[in-house]
Length: 184
Image (cartoon, rainbow, N blue to C red):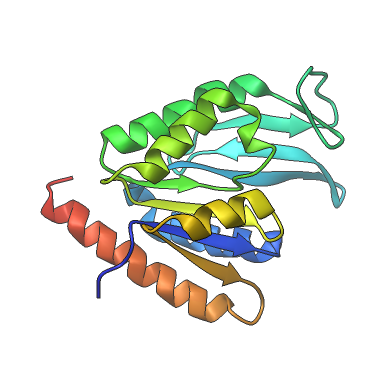
C-alpha cells in the first residue's frame, strides 16, 4: 500500500491525542523529529504547556505565570521556545531524514512566524513525511489540509481511535521502510 506523504489528525480530545502520540513516540521515537506539546498541570488544573521533542528536549511554551507581549487565551507565550527549539527541531529532523512531527498546529504554535515558515515548508516539501495534529473546528487548518493533495486527514475521536491507531502505524512503518532504504 502506498501512503500519502503527510498525515493530519483532526482531534477533538487532547487526552486521546496525547495517548496516541505517547505510544508512537515511545515506539518510533528514533524515526521522529519535530515537536509535540504537553499540558503543564498543577493539582489537576492546567497551568500551561510544554514544547517537547522526541529526543527529550523541552521548553516551557506557555503559562499563566509568563508575562509576555505574546499571549494565547490566558497564557503568556514563551516565543523563544517556538523560535529556537521549535524551529531547530524541524530543521534537524529534515536534515537527519526523520518523519516530522507537528503537534497542535494552531494559533498558539503559529505565534512564531519563523516556526510557521518551517512548518509550511516541511508540509509542502516533496520529500519530508509529516505527521500533524490540529484541533477539530480549526477551520483554517481543516480547509488547508483538505486541499493538500499529498495529505490524508483522519478524525481522531473515541469511536475512531483504534482505526486511526492502525492506519497511523501502517503509515509510520511505510515511511520508516522508505527511510531505511534511503540509508537514513
